[in-house]
Length: 270
Image 1 (tube, rainbow, N blue to C red):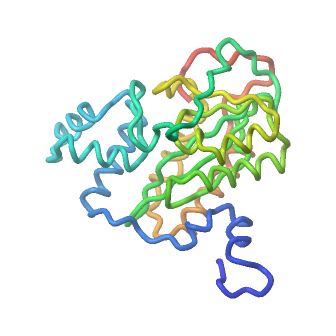
Image 2: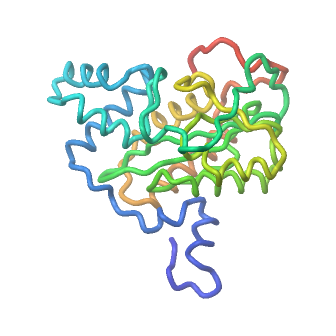
């Protein structure tokens, strides 16, 4: 799909056209044992059902399902996956050291038009012999995915690439909302936002419900796409995610309303 020696079109440009980060082109499976990869898939599924589970509860759940695990292993795997229970932030989701945390601006706000509020988030994508990370930019009013990128690291670059694509296509929003993860408190991310003269909003620490629409997106994506496949390569993952997001944006019915609504309302099922 991507050719290293294509005249006039670098690997970086080819990756940008295909909505994947350059690092994913060179993707190699993470060095985790088959047992740990299986545990990570189980943790990912359970976390969608019980996002308030911390290390202790997740370890208890897995032991109840006859998996011999201790809390030390589960803590490391949840950190590697970037998962955070609603009451705390594990290491990959901590704010970048020395960077500013912005206030949460959506409480009581009426979100009634496109490009008023965008949100962004990152999730873990299991592979047959490893894993990747996916970031999406979503419009909070239309619930549509505006841009996305896949990467094999949690560095901020692939998030900024997705943001640049969304802004280039749709123009900047009035407000961008994220969690306090290191990718979204990094200078690269916040400087890009400040340069577009928009307002920056960040969820309360550990409050995944502040970004409820993108959490619902992850649930739908994983049950309707990710868990149905066992991707071998970054290119396969990219193609699968792209197909599902096209379906989600254009064919799948979802909860975006045609009339004005508040940013806070009943959190019913998808």
